[in-house]
Image (tube, rainbow, N blue to C red; front, side, top):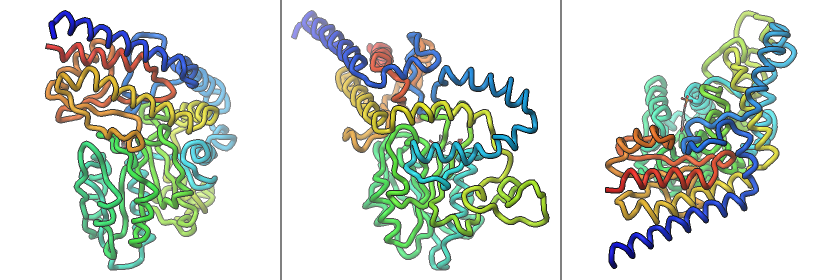
Length: 419
Ligand SMILES: *Cc1c(COP(=O)(O)O)cnc(C)c1O
């Protein structure tokens, strides 16, 4: 093929893919949601909503009104009038709209790291069989999860059983079956792998762990707000996740904890604070946990992040998780299509499963030049994130990401890699 034919074909290809992006945006039933977010009227291509979601425009008003009227006007009265109930009220809204959890099992508190610590220790307290001395985890889980379990194992005199997960995929049901048995106390896994975007088979794995007599703690950081969940239906024991990723609560917004109702009576979590005590304002001697999920609280809840998150939960409630998942699947499929057309020929590798049902809402690409390419992309207002040793994650936030934005971002990656 002559080089002119090459160039003509490439142009044709590029025009067809741009037309496809425009067509997909035109057909997208959630397209109107993008306009509800700040900054979506610029050419910036934001491909990192899986690390920090964009703010909704209404958040400016929600937080402004809160400062003026709530904090500024009600002052300390605000705690009694509304704020003390927010961890449970917003927890229930999250349970209903995102988690598939009946009321009274979800609470907003702390950070994911602290919540996971409390949940894993609470799960271990439920396990009474002294022969169960192992925590099962995997080598590809997010660092905080691995470090926490290492610390807890040391505190509790337990041992760790590591599943060696495929870095471009994730933990399979067979691997969990092999790793669990009469010695397993607790299994800790991420639903969507933070690096590869692999979506673990949560119902199957939960069942396998249960049939081995173990409890499961699921980290939902990358699935809450991107993947449909049915925690009650799957019989999940415990779960935690971030609210600043697909739930747009803002930097450092508090995490959520889910505890299945069957574990709530007598729940023992390790951080005994006054907010988790029965009749907190009696300030009485000795710790007695508040009944139900409230006993999971430790200290004063962070109100700002919860208010930002509420806007996003209202929007999710309106659109429904099914529509969000449908768009997420289309977005990741489009990113894979652009990868095949543009980046694969340049030596980039796909480090995310090709089967749509095994993907969360981001796509990971590997290439030795990506550390430098990411810096150059950020300068051009194309914002994925870099994951060592040489991966970029293309995070696709269904409510705020457009197909044209993905096209623009991936075209910039192609241009920077071209010799
Ligand atoms: C983002 C993320 C965390 C973050 O924990 P923080 O306590 O909020 O810093 C934890 N686990 C996973 C899997 C994550 O993706």
